[in-house]
Image (tube, rainbow, N blue to C red; front, side, top):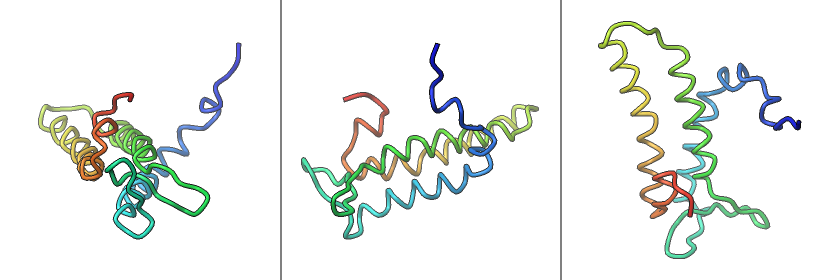
Length: 115
C-alpha cells in the first residue's frame, strides 16, 4: 500500500500557518487586477509570471479549507450562541474568496465543481 505525500505533512504546521496561508491566497486573488492578471476565455483568472502562469483560485481553495479547519479546531463546543459565532466566522472567511472568484467570472471554481 502506498502513502499519499500529503499524509506525510504534519497538520500542526498547517494549523500554525493557517492565517498566513489564507492571507497569501487572498493576496494572490487580488493580484489578478494588477498587471500580472491575464484575461483568457473572457475571464480574468490567471496570474502570469513570464514562463509560468497559474490560477490563484486553486490556491484559495486550499487556503479556505485550512483556515476553516483551524477556526473549527480551535473553537470551544458549547452553547448554540457559541456555535453560531463560530459558523459566522467560518462563513465570513469563506465569503471573501468566493466574492473575489465570482468577480473573475470563474463560476465553476466559485461553486467548487469540476469542469
